[in-house]
Length: 239
Image (tube, rainbow, N blue to C red; front, side, top):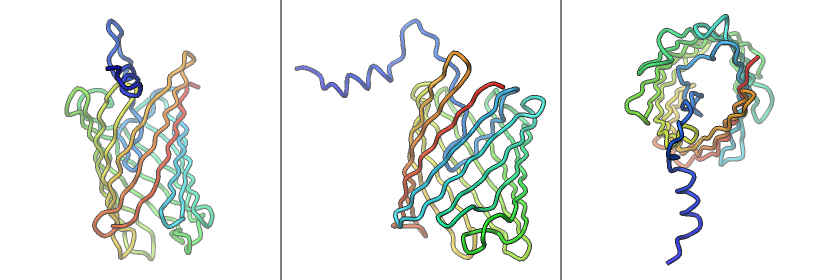
């Protein structure tokens, strides 16, 4: 019996190539979870993300990450866009405490939140500070986990907290399957989502790497009946 064409295509894409050395695995951000890998020296990354919720609302963000005299320190900024306009811009600093090579990477981040977004659209209404502690742990040859714990502090508002984790299955070094869990309490109500997704990488001879991805956040517990589609695109290149 002739095998299905789709099954043949999947086998050809995912099967390892005999005699070929696989490139280094993708070390990018997960979709809802921050991975603990700073930018390599003289490499800049541009990240675009877009989320469309089942109620018709949407959110997007653009982030640009720059190494500072090497991989130990990283500066970046994030500009979020909401259904009603621009959100609070974040200026970020990350310190590579351990890693990125080896089994464990830890890279704490501190961010200054600028009050550029309207309060009715989710803006803080005042300058704030966000702290996050990402840790990345390789638990097997093709399995990596990422862990986050963070808080956002804004004068006159209750602290907001967020924790989460993701598991990355490196089916191939350039094709990953993701599963994320993200919990947050931005105000009086908590939110809890799981997000299955995939991402893949295209690397070019000039050093440019393009990483598209797609996820499907699904609300559980306090966020049940909420669903969304998440689109991700990263461009990374030397400078």
